[in-house]
Length: 603
Ligand SMILES: [Zn+2]
Image (cartoon, rainbow, N blue to C red; front, side, top):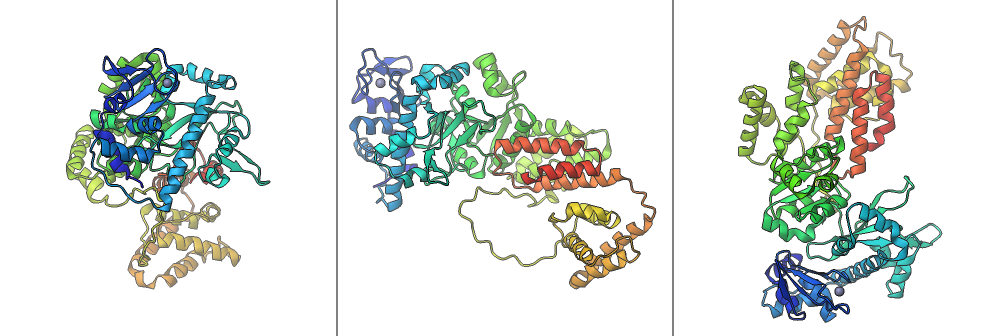
Protein backbone atom coordinates (compact mmCIF):
# COMPACT_ATOMS: atom_id res chain seq x y z
CA UNK A 1 0.00 0.00 0.00
CA UNK A 2 1.17 3.45 -0.77
CA UNK A 3 -0.10 6.92 -1.67
CA UNK A 4 1.11 9.47 -4.13
CA UNK A 5 2.87 12.59 -2.92
CA UNK A 6 0.16 14.80 -4.42
CA UNK A 7 -2.46 12.89 -2.47
CA UNK A 8 -0.50 13.08 0.75
CA UNK A 9 -0.25 16.81 0.21
CA UNK A 10 -3.99 17.00 -0.39
CA UNK A 11 -4.60 15.11 2.84
CA UNK A 12 -2.29 17.41 4.81
CA UNK A 13 -4.04 20.41 3.32
CA UNK A 14 -7.46 19.25 4.40
CA UNK A 15 -6.59 18.03 7.89
CA UNK A 16 -6.90 20.37 10.83
CA UNK A 17 -3.89 19.48 12.90
CA UNK A 18 -5.45 20.75 16.14
CA UNK A 19 -8.24 18.27 15.55
CA UNK A 20 -5.90 15.35 14.88
CA UNK A 21 -3.75 16.10 17.93
CA UNK A 22 -6.75 17.11 20.01
CA UNK A 23 -8.00 13.55 19.96
CA UNK A 24 -5.00 12.47 22.02
CA UNK A 25 -3.90 15.61 23.82
CA UNK A 26 -5.96 18.01 25.87
CA UNK A 27 -5.29 21.30 24.12
CA UNK A 28 -5.73 24.83 25.45
CA UNK A 29 -5.75 27.83 23.17
CA UNK A 30 -2.84 30.19 23.65
CA UNK A 31 -2.67 33.07 21.19
CA UNK A 32 -2.70 31.73 17.67
CA UNK A 33 -1.58 28.28 18.81
CA UNK A 34 -2.62 25.52 21.20
CA UNK A 35 -0.71 24.01 24.11
CA UNK A 36 -0.93 20.71 25.95
CA UNK A 37 1.01 18.03 27.78
CA UNK A 38 3.39 16.17 25.51
CA UNK A 39 2.21 12.59 24.96
CA UNK A 40 5.72 11.43 24.10
CA UNK A 41 7.55 12.14 27.34
CA UNK A 42 6.62 12.48 31.01
CA UNK A 43 5.50 16.08 30.78
CA UNK A 44 4.43 18.14 33.76
CA UNK A 45 3.97 21.59 32.31
CA UNK A 46 2.49 21.93 28.83
CA UNK A 47 5.41 21.64 26.40
CA UNK A 48 3.51 20.45 23.38
CA UNK A 49 2.45 23.19 21.02
CA UNK A 50 0.22 23.03 17.95
CA UNK A 51 0.27 25.74 15.30
CA UNK A 52 -2.82 25.44 13.10
CA UNK A 53 -1.65 28.16 10.76
CA UNK A 54 1.54 26.27 9.96
CA UNK A 55 -0.08 22.86 10.30
CA UNK A 56 2.64 21.60 12.60
CA UNK A 57 2.99 20.46 16.19
CA UNK A 58 6.08 20.33 18.34
CA UNK A 59 7.30 19.41 21.79
CA UNK A 60 9.82 21.89 23.07
CA UNK A 61 11.34 19.41 25.47
CA UNK A 62 11.73 16.12 23.61
CA UNK A 63 11.52 17.50 20.07
CA UNK A 64 8.70 15.18 18.97
CA UNK A 65 6.30 16.50 16.40
CA UNK A 66 5.91 17.36 12.76
CA UNK A 67 2.82 17.40 10.61
CA UNK A 68 -0.42 15.59 11.35
CA UNK A 69 0.74 12.38 9.69
CA UNK A 70 4.03 12.33 11.63
CA UNK A 71 2.10 12.84 14.85
CA UNK A 72 -0.51 10.22 14.11
CA UNK A 73 1.98 7.55 13.06
CA UNK A 74 4.05 8.15 16.16
CA UNK A 75 1.21 8.13 18.65
CA UNK A 76 -0.44 5.07 17.12
CA UNK A 77 2.95 3.44 16.51
CA UNK A 78 2.13 2.68 12.89
CA UNK A 79 4.01 3.37 9.67
CA UNK A 80 3.72 6.65 7.79
CA UNK A 81 1.64 5.13 4.99
CA UNK A 82 -0.65 3.39 7.46
CA UNK A 83 -1.16 6.73 9.15
CA UNK A 84 -2.04 8.31 5.81
CA UNK A 85 -4.59 5.58 5.16
CA UNK A 86 -6.23 5.80 8.58
CA UNK A 87 -6.36 9.58 8.62
CA UNK A 88 -7.85 9.71 5.14
CA UNK A 89 -10.58 7.26 6.19
CA UNK A 90 -11.19 8.95 9.49
CA UNK A 91 -11.48 12.47 8.15
CA UNK A 92 -13.09 11.44 4.86
CA UNK A 93 -10.46 12.76 2.53
CA UNK A 94 -10.78 10.99 -0.75
CA UNK A 95 -7.38 9.79 -1.91
CA UNK A 96 -6.42 6.81 -3.96
CA UNK A 97 -4.53 3.90 -2.51
CA UNK A 98 -2.02 2.13 -4.71
CA UNK A 99 -0.66 -1.36 -4.42
CA UNK A 100 2.89 -1.25 -3.29
CA UNK A 101 5.42 -2.30 -5.85
CA UNK A 102 8.76 -3.64 -4.71
CA UNK A 103 10.27 -0.19 -5.06
CA UNK A 104 7.67 1.26 -2.71
CA UNK A 105 8.42 -1.35 -0.08
CA UNK A 106 12.11 -0.59 -0.46
CA UNK A 107 11.43 3.13 -0.24
CA UNK A 108 9.40 2.70 2.94
CA UNK A 109 12.39 0.93 4.43
CA UNK A 110 14.67 3.76 3.31
CA UNK A 111 12.44 6.39 4.92
CA UNK A 112 12.52 4.38 8.12
CA UNK A 113 16.31 4.19 8.11
CA UNK A 114 16.56 7.93 7.53
CA UNK A 115 14.18 8.60 10.38
CA UNK A 116 16.12 6.34 12.74
CA UNK A 117 19.34 8.05 11.72
CA UNK A 118 17.77 11.44 12.29
CA UNK A 119 16.68 10.42 15.79
CA UNK A 120 20.25 9.27 16.43
CA UNK A 121 21.65 12.64 15.31
CA UNK A 122 19.08 14.58 17.36
CA UNK A 123 19.97 12.58 20.48
CA UNK A 124 23.63 13.36 19.96
CA UNK A 125 23.36 17.11 19.74
CA UNK A 126 22.81 17.56 23.45
CA UNK A 127 25.48 15.03 24.42
CA UNK A 128 28.73 16.05 26.06
CA UNK A 129 30.80 15.41 22.93
CA UNK A 130 28.88 17.89 20.80
CA UNK A 131 29.86 20.99 22.71
CA UNK A 132 31.58 22.55 19.69
CA UNK A 133 28.39 22.03 17.70
CA UNK A 134 26.28 23.76 20.33
CA UNK A 135 28.80 26.59 20.56
CA UNK A 136 28.74 27.08 16.84
CA UNK A 137 24.95 27.13 16.75
CA UNK A 138 24.58 29.45 19.70
CA UNK A 139 27.04 31.85 18.07
CA UNK A 140 24.72 31.85 15.08
CA UNK A 141 21.77 32.69 17.30
CA UNK A 142 20.27 29.23 17.69
CA UNK A 143 19.37 28.37 21.26
CA UNK A 144 18.20 25.02 22.60
CA UNK A 145 14.58 25.66 21.69
CA UNK A 146 15.38 26.58 18.13
CA UNK A 147 17.69 23.60 17.71
CA UNK A 148 14.83 21.37 18.83
CA UNK A 149 12.27 23.21 16.77
CA UNK A 150 14.33 22.82 13.62
CA UNK A 151 15.32 19.30 14.57
CA UNK A 152 19.03 19.83 14.06
CA UNK A 153 21.41 17.04 14.95
CA UNK A 154 25.02 16.20 15.46
CA UNK A 155 27.08 13.45 13.83
CA UNK A 156 29.77 12.31 16.28
CA UNK A 157 33.44 12.49 15.35
CA UNK A 158 34.04 8.78 15.87
CA UNK A 159 34.34 6.56 12.83
CA UNK A 160 31.26 4.39 13.02
CA UNK A 161 28.84 5.38 15.76
CA UNK A 162 25.88 5.76 13.43
CA UNK A 163 26.80 2.57 11.62
CA UNK A 164 26.94 0.59 14.87
CA UNK A 165 23.61 2.08 15.94
CA UNK A 166 21.92 1.14 12.66
CA UNK A 167 23.44 -2.34 12.60
CA UNK A 168 21.84 -3.02 15.94
CA UNK A 169 18.53 -2.34 14.22
CA UNK A 170 19.44 -5.03 11.67
CA UNK A 171 19.65 -2.81 8.62
CA UNK A 172 21.81 -4.18 5.82
CA UNK A 173 25.10 -2.60 4.76
CA UNK A 174 23.74 -2.46 1.25
CA UNK A 175 20.80 -0.25 2.24
CA UNK A 176 22.99 2.04 4.32
CA UNK A 177 25.42 2.41 1.42
CA UNK A 178 22.53 3.12 -0.94
CA UNK A 179 21.40 5.94 1.32
CA UNK A 180 24.92 7.34 1.54
CA UNK A 181 24.94 7.12 5.32
CA UNK A 182 28.09 5.02 5.33
CA UNK A 183 31.04 4.56 3.06
CA UNK A 184 33.42 1.72 2.43
CA UNK A 185 37.13 2.17 1.85
CA UNK A 186 39.31 0.05 -0.41
CA UNK A 187 40.13 -2.41 2.34
CA UNK A 188 36.42 -2.91 2.88
CA UNK A 189 36.29 -1.01 6.14
CA UNK A 190 33.00 0.76 6.75
CA UNK A 191 32.74 4.24 8.25
CA UNK A 192 30.11 6.95 8.74
CA UNK A 193 29.74 9.53 5.96
CA UNK A 194 28.84 12.33 8.36
CA UNK A 195 31.42 12.79 11.12
CA UNK A 196 31.84 15.74 13.46
CA UNK A 197 29.19 17.67 11.62
CA UNK A 198 26.05 19.57 12.45
CA UNK A 199 23.19 17.78 10.76
CA UNK A 200 20.44 19.60 8.91
CA UNK A 201 17.50 17.35 8.07
CA UNK A 202 16.20 17.65 4.54
CA UNK A 203 12.52 16.85 4.08
CA UNK A 204 10.25 15.92 1.24
CA UNK A 205 7.05 17.88 0.60
CA UNK A 206 5.18 15.39 2.73
CA UNK A 207 7.59 16.04 5.58
CA UNK A 208 9.61 12.85 5.52
CA UNK A 209 13.35 12.83 6.00
CA UNK A 210 14.96 12.14 2.66
CA UNK A 211 18.51 13.40 3.12
CA UNK A 212 20.93 15.20 5.40
CA UNK A 213 23.15 18.19 5.03
CA UNK A 214 26.19 18.29 7.26
CA UNK A 215 28.34 21.24 8.23
CA UNK A 216 31.86 20.38 9.30
CA UNK A 217 33.17 21.47 12.69
CA UNK A 218 36.76 20.56 11.83
CA UNK A 219 39.30 23.34 11.66
CA UNK A 220 41.04 21.57 8.77
CA UNK A 221 40.35 23.55 5.58
CA UNK A 222 40.84 20.57 3.31
CA UNK A 223 37.65 18.99 4.63
CA UNK A 224 34.60 20.24 2.73
CA UNK A 225 32.57 22.61 4.86
CA UNK A 226 29.22 21.29 3.70
CA UNK A 227 28.32 17.86 2.44
CA UNK A 228 24.95 16.46 1.43
CA UNK A 229 23.52 13.02 1.10
CA UNK A 230 24.17 11.74 -2.42
CA UNK A 231 21.30 11.05 -4.81
CA UNK A 232 19.43 8.02 -3.54
CA UNK A 233 16.18 6.25 -4.44
CA UNK A 234 14.32 8.75 -2.22
CA UNK A 235 16.39 11.87 -2.82
CA UNK A 236 17.51 13.72 -5.94
CA UNK A 237 19.28 16.89 -5.08
CA UNK A 238 18.39 18.73 -8.26
CA UNK A 239 14.72 17.93 -7.68
CA UNK A 240 14.36 18.70 -3.99
CA UNK A 241 14.55 21.97 -2.10
CA UNK A 242 15.64 22.72 1.41
CA UNK A 243 12.66 24.04 3.37
CA UNK A 244 9.97 22.71 1.00
CA UNK A 245 8.21 20.96 3.91
CA UNK A 246 6.86 24.41 4.76
CA UNK A 247 5.45 24.86 1.27
CA UNK A 248 1.96 25.47 2.58
CA UNK A 249 3.27 28.79 3.94
CA UNK A 250 4.40 29.67 0.45
CA UNK A 251 0.95 28.95 -0.87
CA UNK A 252 -0.74 30.97 1.86
CA UNK A 253 1.53 33.99 1.57
CA UNK A 254 1.92 33.61 -2.16
CA UNK A 255 5.66 34.15 -2.32
CA UNK A 256 8.87 32.34 -1.53
CA UNK A 257 12.33 33.59 -0.62
CA UNK A 258 15.13 31.76 -2.35
CA UNK A 259 18.36 31.78 -0.37
CA UNK A 260 21.79 30.23 -0.72
CA UNK A 261 22.17 27.89 2.20
CA UNK A 262 20.85 26.12 5.25
CA UNK A 263 21.90 28.81 7.71
CA UNK A 264 20.18 31.55 5.73
CA UNK A 265 16.96 29.58 5.67
CA UNK A 266 17.17 28.82 9.38
CA UNK A 267 17.84 32.45 10.26
CA UNK A 268 14.98 33.59 8.11
CA UNK A 269 12.69 31.14 9.90
CA UNK A 270 13.83 32.35 13.29
CA UNK A 271 12.68 35.82 12.26
CA UNK A 272 9.44 34.33 11.00
CA UNK A 273 10.18 34.52 7.29
CA UNK A 274 8.81 31.04 6.94
CA UNK A 275 8.60 30.87 3.17
CA UNK A 276 12.35 30.69 2.71
CA UNK A 277 13.96 27.84 0.81
CA UNK A 278 17.33 26.96 -0.70
CA UNK A 279 18.58 24.72 -3.47
CA UNK A 280 20.61 21.78 -2.20
CA UNK A 281 24.26 22.00 -3.06
CA UNK A 282 23.58 22.97 -6.67
CA UNK A 283 22.63 26.04 -8.58
CA UNK A 284 18.88 26.23 -9.01
CA UNK A 285 17.55 23.69 -11.51
CA UNK A 286 14.51 23.80 -13.76
CA UNK A 287 12.88 21.02 -11.80
CA UNK A 288 13.35 22.87 -8.53
CA UNK A 289 11.79 25.94 -10.11
CA UNK A 290 8.81 23.87 -11.24
CA UNK A 291 8.43 22.48 -7.75
CA UNK A 292 8.40 25.97 -6.21
CA UNK A 293 5.92 27.17 -8.81
CA UNK A 294 3.32 24.70 -7.64
CA UNK A 295 2.96 26.94 -4.58
CA UNK A 296 3.59 30.43 -5.88
CA UNK A 297 5.09 32.10 -8.91
CA UNK A 298 6.31 35.09 -6.90
CA UNK A 299 9.85 34.77 -5.68
CA UNK A 300 12.36 36.94 -3.85
CA UNK A 301 16.00 36.16 -4.50
CA UNK A 302 18.10 36.61 -1.41
CA UNK A 303 21.67 35.61 -2.19
CA UNK A 304 25.03 36.75 -0.88
CA UNK A 305 26.10 40.24 -1.76
CA UNK A 306 29.43 39.27 -3.33
CA UNK A 307 30.19 38.67 -6.96
CA UNK A 308 29.41 34.97 -6.78
CA UNK A 309 26.05 35.78 -5.19
CA UNK A 310 25.28 38.22 -7.96
CA UNK A 311 26.06 35.77 -10.68
CA UNK A 312 24.03 33.13 -8.84
CA UNK A 313 21.14 35.61 -8.83
CA UNK A 314 21.57 36.21 -12.54
CA UNK A 315 21.69 32.50 -13.26
CA UNK A 316 18.70 31.68 -11.06
CA UNK A 317 16.70 34.43 -12.72
CA UNK A 318 17.17 32.80 -16.14
CA UNK A 319 15.90 29.47 -14.85
CA UNK A 320 12.99 31.13 -13.04
CA UNK A 321 12.05 33.29 -16.01
CA UNK A 322 11.93 30.23 -18.22
CA UNK A 323 9.23 28.99 -15.84
CA UNK A 324 7.32 32.27 -15.78
CA UNK A 325 8.15 33.61 -12.31
CA UNK A 326 7.85 37.18 -11.08
CA UNK A 327 11.23 37.88 -9.58
CA UNK A 328 12.49 40.52 -7.18
CA UNK A 329 15.97 40.76 -5.73
CA UNK A 330 16.87 41.64 -2.15
CA UNK A 331 19.97 43.71 -1.53
CA UNK A 332 21.55 44.07 1.86
CA UNK A 333 23.73 46.98 2.73
CA UNK A 334 26.47 46.45 5.26
CA UNK A 335 26.15 42.69 5.45
CA UNK A 336 27.61 39.88 3.41
CA UNK A 337 24.49 37.74 3.41
CA UNK A 338 20.88 37.70 4.63
CA UNK A 339 21.85 35.65 7.69
CA UNK A 340 24.26 38.34 8.89
CA UNK A 341 21.83 41.11 7.99
CA UNK A 342 18.99 39.58 9.97
CA UNK A 343 21.17 39.10 13.02
CA UNK A 344 22.48 42.63 12.91
CA UNK A 345 19.26 44.44 12.08
CA UNK A 346 16.29 42.20 12.79
CA UNK A 347 12.95 41.59 11.20
CA UNK A 348 11.75 45.13 10.58
CA UNK A 349 14.89 46.10 8.70
CA UNK A 350 14.59 42.95 6.60
CA UNK A 351 11.02 43.89 5.72
CA UNK A 352 12.30 47.24 4.54
CA UNK A 353 14.79 45.45 2.33
CA UNK A 354 11.89 43.47 0.91
CA UNK A 355 10.03 46.70 0.21
CA UNK A 356 13.04 48.18 -1.53
CA UNK A 357 13.74 45.04 -3.52
CA UNK A 358 14.54 45.44 -7.19
CA UNK A 359 12.55 43.96 -10.02
CA UNK A 360 14.89 41.45 -11.68
CA UNK A 361 15.33 43.54 -14.80
CA UNK A 362 16.41 46.57 -12.80
CA UNK A 363 18.84 44.39 -10.90
CA UNK A 364 20.38 43.06 -14.12
CA UNK A 365 20.50 46.58 -15.52
CA UNK A 366 22.51 47.72 -12.52
CA UNK A 367 24.73 44.68 -12.65
CA UNK A 368 25.48 44.92 -16.36
CA UNK A 369 25.86 48.67 -16.49
CA UNK A 370 28.59 48.43 -13.86
CA UNK A 371 30.55 46.33 -16.34
CA UNK A 372 30.49 48.74 -19.28
CA UNK A 373 31.36 52.32 -20.03
CA UNK A 374 28.07 53.41 -21.56
CA UNK A 375 29.52 56.56 -23.08
CA UNK A 376 31.48 54.36 -25.45
CA UNK A 377 29.41 53.25 -28.42
CA UNK A 378 31.01 49.79 -28.76
CA UNK A 379 30.69 49.19 -25.05
CA UNK A 380 27.06 50.23 -25.26
CA UNK A 381 26.48 47.72 -28.00
CA UNK A 382 28.08 44.96 -25.93
CA UNK A 383 26.00 46.07 -23.00
CA UNK A 384 22.80 45.58 -24.99
CA UNK A 385 24.02 42.19 -26.16
CA UNK A 386 24.49 41.24 -22.54
CA UNK A 387 20.69 41.12 -22.16
CA UNK A 388 20.32 38.53 -24.88
CA UNK A 389 20.40 35.58 -22.58
CA UNK A 390 17.78 37.07 -20.25
CA UNK A 391 15.45 37.85 -23.15
CA UNK A 392 15.90 34.38 -24.57
CA UNK A 393 14.41 32.92 -21.39
CA UNK A 394 11.31 35.11 -21.31
CA UNK A 395 8.15 33.21 -22.11
CA UNK A 396 5.57 35.87 -22.93
CA UNK A 397 5.48 38.67 -25.48
CA UNK A 398 4.04 41.00 -22.91
CA UNK A 399 7.09 40.62 -20.71
CA UNK A 400 9.43 41.07 -23.62
CA UNK A 401 7.70 44.30 -24.62
CA UNK A 402 7.68 45.59 -21.07
CA UNK A 403 11.40 45.03 -20.60
CA UNK A 404 12.23 46.38 -24.05
CA UNK A 405 10.36 49.57 -23.21
CA UNK A 406 12.16 49.82 -19.90
CA UNK A 407 15.56 49.37 -21.52
CA UNK A 408 14.76 51.70 -24.38
CA UNK A 409 13.92 54.48 -21.94
CA UNK A 410 16.92 53.85 -19.76
CA UNK A 411 19.55 53.94 -22.46
CA UNK A 412 17.69 56.12 -24.93
CA UNK A 413 17.78 53.76 -27.87
CA UNK A 414 14.86 53.14 -30.18
CA UNK A 415 12.75 50.19 -29.04
CA UNK A 416 12.58 48.71 -32.55
CA UNK A 417 16.34 48.40 -32.69
CA UNK A 418 16.38 46.71 -29.32
CA UNK A 419 13.56 44.40 -30.35
CA UNK A 420 15.52 43.37 -33.39
CA UNK A 421 18.63 42.52 -31.39
CA UNK A 422 17.08 41.05 -28.29
CA UNK A 423 13.97 39.36 -29.62
CA UNK A 424 13.88 38.84 -33.36
CA UNK A 425 17.50 37.85 -33.88
CA UNK A 426 17.72 36.13 -30.56
CA UNK A 427 15.78 32.94 -30.93
CA UNK A 428 16.59 29.64 -29.32
CA UNK A 429 20.22 30.38 -28.75
CA UNK A 430 20.17 29.55 -25.11
CA UNK A 431 18.59 26.40 -23.87
CA UNK A 432 17.81 25.67 -20.29
CA UNK A 433 19.17 22.26 -19.55
CA UNK A 434 17.09 20.15 -17.24
CA UNK A 435 18.57 18.27 -14.39
CA UNK A 436 18.88 15.02 -16.24
CA UNK A 437 18.70 11.70 -14.55
CA UNK A 438 17.05 9.74 -17.26
CA UNK A 439 19.19 10.37 -20.28
CA UNK A 440 16.97 10.57 -23.28
CA UNK A 441 18.13 9.13 -26.52
CA UNK A 442 18.63 12.01 -28.85
CA UNK A 443 17.56 11.48 -32.43
CA UNK A 444 20.54 11.60 -34.72
CA UNK A 445 20.70 15.07 -36.11
CA UNK A 446 20.91 15.62 -39.77
CA UNK A 447 24.43 16.71 -40.46
CA UNK A 448 24.26 20.37 -41.04
CA UNK A 449 26.98 22.68 -42.14
CA UNK A 450 27.62 25.08 -39.32
CA UNK A 451 28.58 28.54 -40.37
CA UNK A 452 31.15 30.56 -38.53
CA UNK A 453 30.43 33.74 -36.64
CA UNK A 454 32.76 36.70 -36.78
CA UNK A 455 34.65 35.71 -33.69
CA UNK A 456 35.55 32.30 -35.01
CA UNK A 457 36.56 33.71 -38.37
CA UNK A 458 38.79 36.20 -36.60
CA UNK A 459 40.36 33.39 -34.62
CA UNK A 460 41.03 31.49 -37.83
CA UNK A 461 42.73 34.59 -39.22
CA UNK A 462 44.75 34.98 -36.08
CA UNK A 463 45.91 31.37 -36.16
CA UNK A 464 47.17 31.77 -39.68
CA UNK A 465 49.13 34.84 -38.63
CA UNK A 466 50.30 33.45 -35.31
CA UNK A 467 50.57 29.66 -35.72
CA UNK A 468 52.06 29.39 -32.23
CA UNK A 469 48.61 30.06 -30.79
CA UNK A 470 47.43 26.78 -32.23
CA UNK A 471 48.91 25.16 -29.15
CA UNK A 472 46.21 26.91 -27.10
CA UNK A 473 43.26 26.11 -29.36
CA UNK A 474 44.20 22.57 -30.31
CA UNK A 475 41.94 20.95 -27.68
CA UNK A 476 39.12 23.43 -28.07
CA UNK A 477 35.88 22.80 -29.82
CA UNK A 478 34.46 25.44 -32.14
CA UNK A 479 30.89 25.85 -33.29
CA UNK A 480 31.58 26.25 -36.96
CA UNK A 481 32.89 23.70 -39.41
CA UNK A 482 35.36 26.12 -40.89
CA UNK A 483 37.06 26.79 -37.56
CA UNK A 484 37.17 23.14 -36.58
CA UNK A 485 38.58 22.33 -40.00
CA UNK A 486 41.28 24.91 -39.40
CA UNK A 487 42.36 23.08 -36.27
CA UNK A 488 42.56 19.85 -38.26
CA UNK A 489 44.60 21.63 -40.86
CA UNK A 490 47.16 22.63 -38.24
CA UNK A 491 47.24 19.20 -36.76
CA UNK A 492 48.02 17.61 -40.09
CA UNK A 493 50.53 20.17 -41.21
CA UNK A 494 52.44 19.84 -37.96
CA UNK A 495 52.62 16.11 -38.56
CA UNK A 496 54.01 16.83 -42.01
CA UNK A 497 56.58 19.15 -40.49
CA UNK A 498 55.22 21.95 -42.57
CA UNK A 499 56.95 25.30 -42.30
CA UNK A 500 54.27 27.78 -41.28
CA UNK A 501 56.48 30.69 -42.28
CA UNK A 502 56.44 29.50 -45.85
CA UNK A 503 54.72 31.40 -48.63
CA UNK A 504 52.62 28.36 -49.35
CA UNK A 505 50.64 28.61 -46.15
CA UNK A 506 47.58 30.31 -47.58
CA UNK A 507 47.42 28.11 -50.64
CA UNK A 508 47.71 24.96 -48.54
CA UNK A 509 45.05 26.25 -46.22
CA UNK A 510 42.67 27.16 -49.00
CA UNK A 511 43.02 23.76 -50.65
CA UNK A 512 42.51 21.99 -47.39
CA UNK A 513 39.31 23.83 -46.49
CA UNK A 514 37.80 23.67 -49.96
CA UNK A 515 38.47 19.98 -50.46
CA UNK A 516 36.10 18.88 -47.83
CA UNK A 517 33.34 21.36 -48.28
CA UNK A 518 32.45 21.28 -51.95
CA UNK A 519 28.76 21.63 -51.35
CA UNK A 520 29.08 24.89 -49.49
CA UNK A 521 31.36 26.50 -51.96
CA UNK A 522 29.66 29.85 -52.04
CA UNK A 523 29.92 30.36 -48.33
CA UNK A 524 33.45 28.97 -48.23
CA UNK A 525 34.52 31.12 -51.13
CA UNK A 526 33.48 34.34 -49.56
CA UNK A 527 35.08 33.49 -46.27
CA UNK A 528 38.30 32.20 -47.72
CA UNK A 529 38.44 35.41 -49.71
CA UNK A 530 38.02 37.44 -46.58
CA UNK A 531 40.67 35.45 -44.71
CA UNK A 532 43.17 35.67 -47.52
CA UNK A 533 42.53 39.35 -48.00
CA UNK A 534 43.07 40.11 -44.36
CA UNK A 535 46.19 37.99 -44.40
CA UNK A 536 47.59 39.74 -47.39
CA UNK A 537 46.81 43.24 -46.23
CA UNK A 538 48.70 42.66 -43.06
CA UNK A 539 52.00 41.39 -44.44
CA UNK A 540 53.93 43.58 -42.03
CA UNK A 541 52.23 41.97 -39.06
CA UNK A 542 51.05 45.30 -37.79
CA UNK A 543 48.31 43.84 -35.68
CA UNK A 544 49.18 44.40 -32.10
CA UNK A 545 49.12 41.76 -29.48
CA UNK A 546 46.44 43.78 -27.70
CA UNK A 547 44.01 42.87 -30.46
CA UNK A 548 44.87 39.22 -30.19
CA UNK A 549 44.39 39.36 -26.45
CA UNK A 550 40.95 40.82 -27.07
CA UNK A 551 40.11 37.87 -29.31
CA UNK A 552 41.20 35.42 -26.64
CA UNK A 553 39.03 37.21 -24.12
CA UNK A 554 36.05 37.32 -26.44
CA UNK A 555 36.46 33.65 -27.12
CA UNK A 556 36.55 33.03 -23.38
CA UNK A 557 33.35 35.02 -22.78
CA UNK A 558 31.45 33.10 -25.39
CA UNK A 559 32.66 29.85 -23.92
CA UNK A 560 31.56 30.89 -20.47
CA UNK A 561 28.17 31.87 -21.78
CA UNK A 562 27.59 28.58 -23.53
CA UNK A 563 28.72 26.49 -20.61
CA UNK A 564 26.18 24.25 -18.90
CA UNK A 565 25.86 25.86 -15.52
CA UNK A 566 22.82 24.04 -14.25
CA UNK A 567 24.77 21.71 -12.04
CA UNK A 568 27.26 24.14 -10.59
CA UNK A 569 27.55 24.11 -6.86
CA UNK A 570 28.32 27.30 -5.06
CA UNK A 571 31.98 26.49 -4.68
CA UNK A 572 32.24 26.14 -8.41
CA UNK A 573 30.45 29.43 -8.90
CA UNK A 574 32.95 31.10 -6.61
CA UNK A 575 35.93 29.58 -8.43
CA UNK A 576 34.41 30.55 -11.71
CA UNK A 577 33.98 34.11 -10.74
CA UNK A 578 37.65 34.21 -9.64
CA UNK A 579 38.58 32.65 -12.93
CA UNK A 580 36.62 35.26 -14.91
CA UNK A 581 38.08 38.05 -12.86
CA UNK A 582 41.65 36.98 -13.48
CA UNK A 583 41.05 36.41 -17.16
CA UNK A 584 39.52 39.85 -17.59
CA UNK A 585 42.52 41.42 -15.91
CA UNK A 586 45.17 39.53 -17.88
CA UNK A 587 47.48 41.88 -19.73
CA UNK A 588 49.08 39.63 -22.34
CA UNK A 589 48.20 36.55 -24.33
CA UNK A 590 50.87 34.64 -22.40
CA UNK A 591 49.30 35.59 -19.11
CA UNK A 592 45.83 34.79 -20.45
CA UNK A 593 46.91 31.30 -21.50
CA UNK A 594 48.60 30.61 -18.22
CA UNK A 595 45.49 31.57 -16.21
CA UNK A 596 43.22 29.74 -18.59
CA UNK A 597 45.21 26.53 -18.33
CA UNK A 598 45.24 26.49 -14.58
CA UNK A 599 41.45 26.97 -14.37
CA UNK A 600 40.14 25.27 -17.46
CA UNK A 601 39.17 22.14 -15.56
CA UNK A 602 36.19 24.19 -14.35
CA UNK A 603 34.48 24.08 -17.74
ZN1 LIG B 1 7.84 15.85 24.61
